[in-house]
Image 1 (cartoon, rainbow, N blue to C red):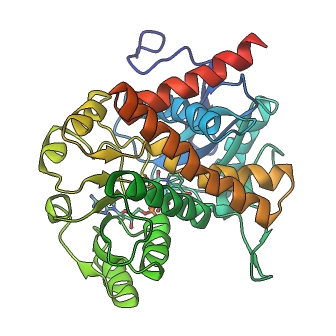
Image 2: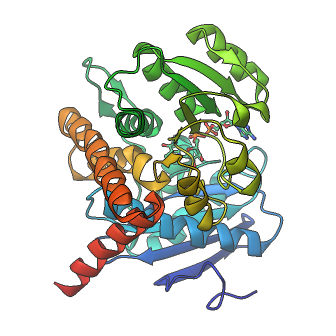
Length: 354
Ligand code: NAD
């Protein structure tokens, strides 16, 4: 297996292969960059077909976290971990604790949180072995209640704010009343986003491979359920990808009929040049790691002192960051993704030079 000359290897500071024969743990932790602070990023559990596939995912995701935190103005670096296994059948207390011990061995250079395939109880199990965890603490809410560490509502709020900034820029609209939005994936983030949009008066089309979930959300929000392939072709104002990565590819970019793409999914561009393809088609793309930073902002404040108003204000700054990216993209005739990458790299370089 290639590591140092892997196409997704980007001078990662550390790539740690972890195994524990007793529990069957096979995992990889990638610490991409700690210039701005400790590398915070979720732990994904997935039945990867090969070690190579797991390595590719963790290299790409950890780099994405460096850029995400840099663009969100957080004192954090980028890291991520993957456990190779089926999240439904492959978890045990012993395996999660073994993962916690591996996180502990990095002495705080990596802070673990939830990702696809792991939830609050899993990170709590890891926390019995390490203090370098986040995304699990109870937090106060605006209505005086409390909620657990799940960052999805914060991510969805950030996407909502970012989507509004994109609509303002591309469609010159200050309100969402009657705006038409197609949401791909109405899981944790997609469903919360759908609620925000509905409340603001938008009309929704939704698709999900989980038919029961589509039915529930459609009924709750008076949304129109559509097929998982059909969602790309709709004549709507906004396409909001909230399911998988790599969904902006040669096929789908050519098919999209929406002038704005703004959604939560990580790694939406199949290959970097799809950012240019969207730009050339006149589609305004809100770079994924900028618009979906609400979750990492929320998780950061769990460790830095949680104040609901402060967290909301920080998440709302995503709108201003995107507006700046959109303006520079117009002025320099550069795809928005390229502009975001450049700003993020610059912030890290500046910190390194200090
Ligand atoms: P989730 O698993 O709760 O929801 C994803 C939904 O997408 C599920 O309902 C699933 O059935 C559906 N789906 C899967 N394949 C699909 C397909 N081909 N077509 C339509 N629907 C499909 O995950 P989530 O936490 O809501 O995250 C959604 C996306 O946002 C992921 O890409 C995730 O990496 C990203 N993200 C999430 C967070 C967070 O705080 N949860 C933060 C940043 C980024």
